[in-house]
Image (cartoon, rainbow, N blue to C red; front, side, top):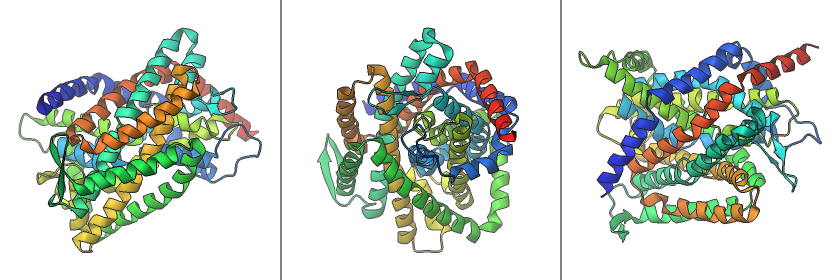
Length: 468
């Protein structure tokens, strides 16, 4: 039965993430990169400066620009950076990492545009909280006739939170990491739902569910407060650990980079299989890259809309840093560690690939290396659970006309999904997440193409005002 479900899900996933969607994502990023004159590179120093600037008091919004960025990063830096990169490289070869870079480079312009539009078209609800995102820039930017497209986006947004990035993949990644560390041999098990599970999985699942519930019930301000503390600390911890692997194996880096580029274009494949290998690397790399940094999916704009800023372009610049931090920094670290240590090609799956890379690459006992990765993964994934609850709640608000009773009931359904996540198969979990990601991206990408003129005009007006 499970095999049949996996086969059906894989076919749907291959269809959703076929060449048309990959081309649409890249084409949107390239269009915006050209029209904005490579803003993601030329204005990068300014974006970094803005990230640490203090907002003016009395500015519309609920949280600071930095808190909005941390909320967005809490949702993006998760299992995608540790498990997702590993699954992409195992399935698509080292070349998948190259296509992650390509998706991130053009995706940074996409992230800038969608977060600019979110602030420009955001609205204030009757109770005073600010809400915005693709559903409002579709409805208010493209016009009321396109409200149906906004509704489709919001529907898939709830689906991604409930069945995709938000719950199943994250808690599954957490419990797998905890299981690998505390009970890798599954010596202590219990029978549940007709299958045998380690006690470490059950206990970790319950603890994550309880902790998530305590934060989620508190709403955005509690989520952003937790994210501001956990995200920077854990990102630095993970990057330092990965840097140590690269430093201790620096002689292998040039060969690893050559392998990545060759694999990206199918040059490592046997004769006649180059095009097929390249397409697989492209598909897995871009799909996992988008899963990780979420550029073009339309999630980050929901957090950006709550930022205390008067300038849409300024928040766009701050928010685009999320893609740089997530993919260019964190995913690259993971990918290089996996390629250098060769753990992508030894029959391992999921978090075990990255765990083995840390064990082989770090000059510590295996137990310490595993513990460092487990802690990073647990906290990354936990903050992603929180961030995606916020995103999906905002989508639900739009769908229901801001009926808070429904939103509060949804929080408990979301928490229930976190609770059952550990008991789903790894393959099914990631496939479901990919499908919902792709379906959520389509309405948003249509809106970004339709409103690219607004983005360019707003950007020009902002930089002209700075000159004056």
